[in-house]
Image (cartoon, rainbow, N blue to C red):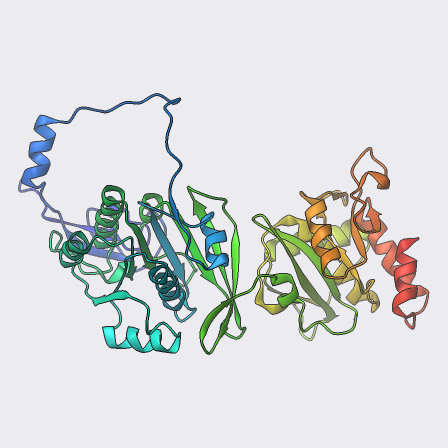
Length: 474
């Protein structure tokens, strides 16, 4: 029986199938199987398989020199990468279309070129004229950055070996193709092969290679997940197009902390750094009103203060709605269930809307207490203390647990002028054991929080801010 000359590869997960099917058995994606030819082993590969190569071994205590870094001069970008780009590393940057990936990376290579680094920008989606026009708009006309518009991997590698750049940006990896494969550009096989060759080039030459990756409708970088395993760092550029700020988040970093963020503000001349994101997210905050709470969160090593808004209203239809923007909808369902089971608050026939102001997205469970406080504030139509920050994790039993690095959260709040912290009291300890950076209202259980909100509401909705604050201090 002749050997098959082709197989079908899922463009979502990369799994291989012997025949076409409408649905991938591995990931469940529909219409994702594409036929690809089965490549033959090259002559060099067969020779290497026959002869082999001696394995070089070292001990764990072998002294290694500190990894050299290239600081870009853009502090927010350097923060996310762990202090600058590591020579010989490969980075993958993903984000929604039009979010500003190309703008950010053009600014990065322009800044490095000004510092004397040899920078190369290769675009597979735009012509050199389009990139030049963007550079002029960003004020980078005089930066000695070499530009090229090319999609052939062989041509790109030949140019890189000839020019020996310190940093090269490939925009984007899905547009590259190699003639060693018969698959179309953008397919799983092409993306995997091109990424592997570029990563190998970075390790051999010491150049830093930055790959731009498209994302799917689910927000994941398109192509096989093996590409994310190949590279040294995976960065996501996030943000709402309706808001002016963008967030660069590290999801993987072999040379620094993960979940670190850098905040940028989009303006006419490109992306500007935001050194104090808490002030940006709270910039448009008005007078204290019901249904709002200020959450003191952590993003990597950086404390960030954001406003959480909640609205509880009678349901207009038979099935109540639960709408969430900027937080996990499953986490909201859990908080509502605890409020109903432990505090006796019924949400039957009520719509619940939750929003994180400014388009920011919160990932940590320490936001539970702030969400519950904002919901209770909306139900009883009474504002929380106007100069208080709230943070703490809620358990299914209704207990409130402490959040990590409470001291850093309170320091950030004090720096921005807040005068009170509402958080959990450590088990078996008194309120005096909490960091004395700000006056603390220690909350042991969720019913205790609801009781304080209800007491303030029964005391009269006409209380001014000082009366509200003194009531919470009791």
